Amino acid sequence: MNKKRFNLILLTIVSIFFGLSINTNKVSAAKYGASLYTTPKAMRGTWYLKNTKTMPNTGVKSDVLHPYSKIKIGTHTIIFTKKRGKRGLSGKYTLYKTPKNVAKFSIKKINAAEKYAAKHRWLAPDNINSRGFEFRKETWLRSYSSTSNGALSVKGRTLTFENIFMKDTFRK
Image 1 (cartoon, rainbow, N blue to C red):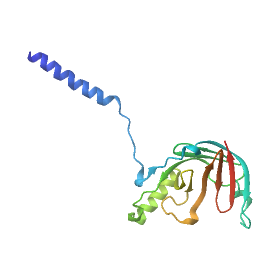
Image 2 (image 1 turned 30 degrees about the vertical axis):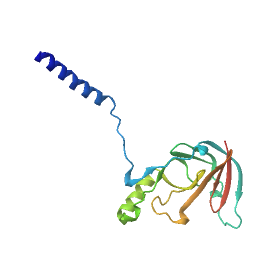
Image 3 (image 1 turned 60 degrees about the horizontal axis):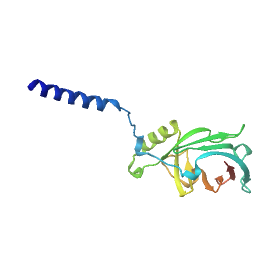
């Protein structure tokens, strides 16, 4: 009888360890208190340039106006495809919200967070409404109004990308 109990206990322990070792996916938390931003469902997909509009009296060189031919928006990512010879964001970026306690960060920690965000290609989105957001790249933590790279919003089957210099529309 003791041998039966011993075998039963041993089998239970082995089963528990085997069960715990099956799913060992590591989950990595974002640094500096960041949290992933989920894009509105209506915005997700691949968008192609349809129309362009330049704001009057901008005085901006043409190589920075209307830089994107395609924008692909995923659940937490955005991919910018630039036109040849244009300057702007290029490639894949991950959307991370800035932490709420950023006011408590030291200058050293803010600079380290900015450097980390730039290295890992993070954009800082801010909700405009349920169908759009604006984003910053250069200053992930410091939310100055002058640092907005652009705003994306969707209405029907049209995506609008705009900033103080231009307003471009994209279609699916």
